[in-house]
Length: 295
Image 1 (tube, helix red, strand yellow):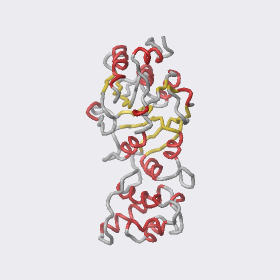
Image 2 (cartoon, one colour; image 1 turned 45 degrees about the vertical axis):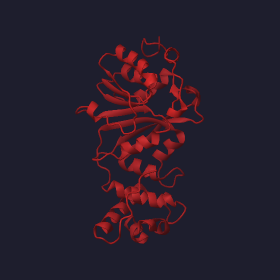
Image 3 (cartoon, one colour; image 1 turned 90 degrees about the vertical axis):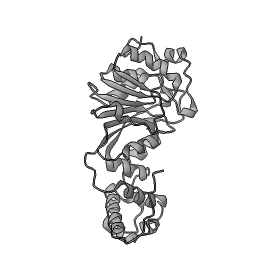
Image 4 (spheres, one colour; image 1 turned 60 degrees about the horizontal axis):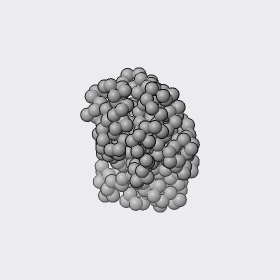
């Protein structure tokens, strides 16, 4: 019997269903149910909450979410081998767990949510974690269908998400994340807690969407950040030339010198430059360079 319910320990579940972790799927199973419960509690309150979980694997976090009161969990699992283990959890919590066997990339959970805003809680597969996060932060219109995200990343990625100007990890991802959400690293998890153990420490990050981010066109914000950080060691007056507008005019809109570098500009400065770029292009002062997607 486990520490949070009367289902079998996760190691027994893995043996019973031959769930060896696959590197190709970015799988590292977290087997300590005390830790999965800690992650679930970070999304509190869970009572009556709807939760979207990505990559549940053998279901350790799924069990914690349900045991702590989540009303409805939508578990999105790409690995069909894990479905029988998740179905055992579903039988234990009848009517509360919905299993969707599909690739999380491109998955739209809204048909499963009704009129309810959800929480996203997940030990994300490392190989798609950043891509998924960018997709959730790029949802239009804003605010999104979720009210909170509690997600696990490699520590290096977590630092890139929460970074601020003048910090080494600050870059395009931080600009997007902190423009649209309040971000915080909650705690770290040692590699030893996983099977197989990854080579890096993991971190749990909470992101709460801002109801009203500073107004600007997200696509233009992407373009400005891509240009600035694409040549991050160069001054703005050089790096912003790729936008085919006057770099000094963009810098002036953010009230910074064009000799500054991207890593010294706060999110508000990038927003101001994106608004100025919109004004220039709306007046036909310069041709568009197209939509530079986040990489």
